[in-house]
Image (cartoon, rainbow, N blue to C red; front, side, top):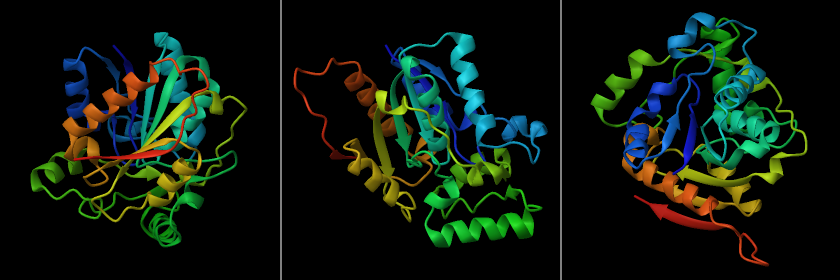
Length: 254
């Protein structure tokens, strides 16, 4: 059985993985879904000093304190930055890193610079005009592909503004990230802001999977996502064949 650490994206908390975690635990897997500093039920810790480094430390310390090994480390959206930072620092503890509609960064890349220019401009403008210069207000959930009113009603009261510093901080990597295998999941039933990141993953010869749902896959397609994550975990546990070369592939789910 696998050990999953599920890292949420902007505005969310660890609770957003509840539906996926339920499916994974039914399969006998161990699941951890922490809330990052300054978000949701931890919003009382929010300050202009909370940045990318804060969130990388959140997950690194979770792995260290609990002594987790062979972790399937999953990051949604913004948390692709967090996953890369953690996997670089704790490569020996990570079996595979999974980017769910998430940023695929190189050393020195800031999340803001990986967004499409029109989206990055909108976010910066929203932070300047409505977020006191350092917060990104919650986006309209329909833009993210959440069509069911019941899902929107469940999400919205729990979402909180996100620290803009996490998007402007550059990711700093050492030399260990490439030691950890990776996979990408693109959610294709919305405006596909992360299409370029999926292309980056393909260029790195990662497996790329397409999920027929909106950006909030953990809410809108929890069973399909759990099944896909379980498959990725199982594949990461298989020893590579002699001379085997990992190539990019695309599979569709949903």
